[in-house]
Every structure is written in structure tokens, then in C-alpha cells.
Length: 204
Image 1 (tube, one colour):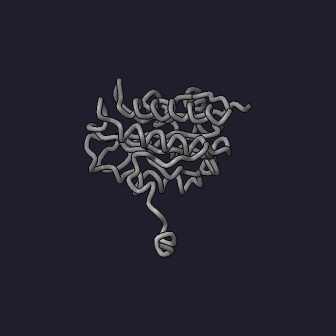
Image 2 (cartoon, helix red, strand yellow; image 1 turned 90 degrees about the vertical axis):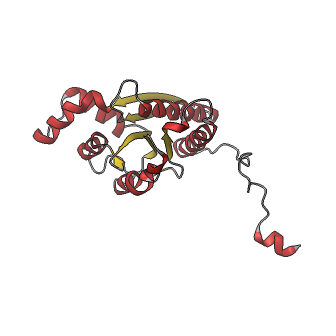
Image 3 (cartoon, rainbow, N blue to C red; image 1 turned 180 degrees about the vertical axis):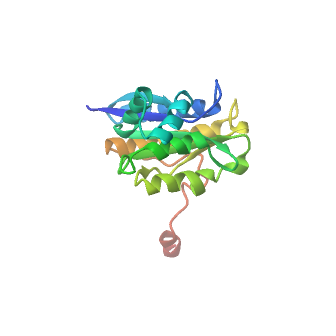
């Protein structure tokens, strides 16, 4: 049994924050998925709003104050990263981008990453694909296929679809971290789960 370190980066600005709420749900689901695969998890949360002034100082001076330096170390030495940003002006937040800007460009090479975003409307859901995923591709991280977006309407009693996406993404991240995929089952919510292959149809 190994202990895997999971760094959770939340770029929410409010307290409480829907961005932090999504980050916590992703972290909990990933931790559970990793344990199902036989490993333990140590979670380290980096709340970027607590480092906003230090990030500005580092951009100007090139030196990270101690608290920011510790946060950077948590992310760059983690076995996996969950990164969640709010959507501002149809893209990731400036605070989120600033944190990535101060990282060593090679610090996340090969690191499994799960990306998420929150916004007030589902119209911003493609931000993860056209803005966030390319950043981590540039940093040569290994981003899981499922990105998790949560609009305001996704929260509450009817958040079943969000729960499913969180579980799927967490499983993908756990697979990468542990190298031992859990047994796959057809998704009961997938209407095409039992669709026969084209070859099978031709043989009929």
C-alpha cells in the first residue's frame, strides 16, 4: 500500500466559494477512488485567494514569500493535482493563471491533473476545453479525459449529473495515480451502454 499526495488548487475568491465546493467534492471522490484501488491519500489544499498578494509580489520580484513557496511545493511535488477555477469574462480567473505563471514550466511534466470550473451559467462550459486544458497541455501534464464544469443550476437536490461527472473524473484520476484501474462497468445512465458494435450488427 502506498500513500498518494493529492494537491487541490482552488481559485475561488469568495467565502464560501462554489469553486472550493467543487474542488472539495472532486478531492473527496478521488480519495475514495484511490482507496478503492488499495492506496491511501494525503490531501493538501491550496486556496489561491490566500496567496493573492504574494503572487503579485513574486511577479514583481521573482521571489516567492514563504507561504507561497510552500503552496508551490505542495503542487509541484504532488502525485496528482486537482485544479478548479471560476470563470471570469469567458475564461479562467486571473488569479488561477497567475499561479500557473509562477510555476517552473517543467514542474508538472507527467503529473496527472483533473480540471474543473464553476460559473453562473452553463454557457461557459467549454472554457475547460478551449482555455484550461490547453494550459496544462503546454505544461505537459497528463489531463484526465473528463473535465468537470458546474453551473449554478447544477447544485442542490437535482445535481445527479454533476455527481456522475465528478465520480467519472475522479476514477480517471485515480487510475492514473495508482496505475491499477478499477473494474469497469457500463454506466447505467448511458443510453448507449448496451449498443451492439457495427460488426455485430453486420453479422446478424
